[in-house]
Image (cartoon, rainbow, N blue to C red; front, side, top):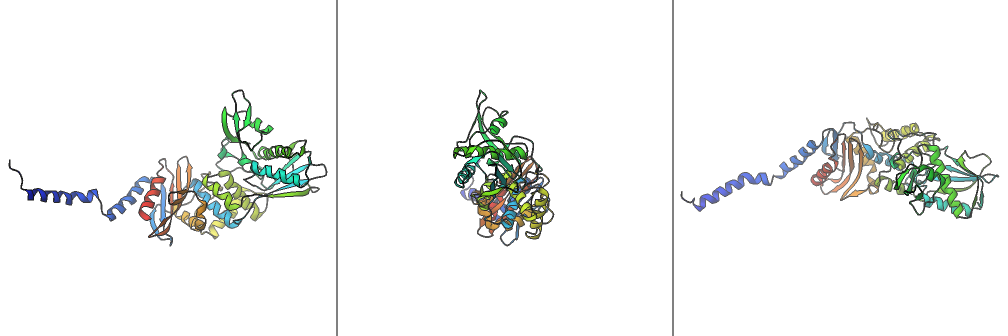
Length: 406
């Protein structure tokens, strides 16, 4: 068999390259079609929408489907709080005394009433002349009794912490339980209290963070027990009990504590760590501020839903609570675009991933991701990925949108 002439071999090489080169390096149009098809394969039951800064749709799949959004609904709650309460809103806590040296504490839902704040409060009370306390009485009447957020489970997990007008350290305690059964505080700034030891009896050995209480009354008592220890540290004489009671007409206001964090400073960590408790404290506060106390979920639902309909233009959605833990919440990816449009100036409050400002959401069978990214050709792109299915492809879908629309 003879050897093929060099010219024939070269022609054969060019022919093969002509046939296979497009397969190895697809044209841009084919590549674009490929990423869209890939997103469609990832979505069995869900919706995906991306729009440019002029609201022109760049990609849409099942955009009108009502879906459970999980924690991405926190963006809607945040927007409502910023607009209805104001960016510089600060929670307050009031302190009263009566002629019997009883100290009354009235709460207004401050979610950042942490050990550091209570230590500062004890110092301010001492400076305002409080040297003797017989009983510490806690008034939680600004929130309705027994507020129960749909979706919370009766567990000791911190994300199941209950809401109330008075709570401390996000309604959780951080403890270390030794092998001999003794319990110590795991936080240097947080003193051990009687209620802490009682609630930590069933905690596992080692370090754990658990709920302070399974209901509002015991949660509000924790504030009093902590305050008692901080007052003692200031040299204030404290006797008597810690219990619940409303502020009486014969009481004198001696100090009003304003939270050191304003609303924007509260929202940033709440969004970063997806804090359910903080979001529903805000949700409940909105209702009480607009329709009067006591705060109830019904009042808050009315106020926030009306705001989202009238001011944001939402249609065909439901908001059962403000954190996203309820499966009764639903919204479409297309309606989420309206929320993101309203929240656009506040996007720095969201956590970042690369060049994207995002909020994620997760429940069993629910994975979602919404946010923004800058684009040379499309300006600021807003996008929503809401999946109500077993397989979680939200990150890959978001990455495909970013790679092809920036």
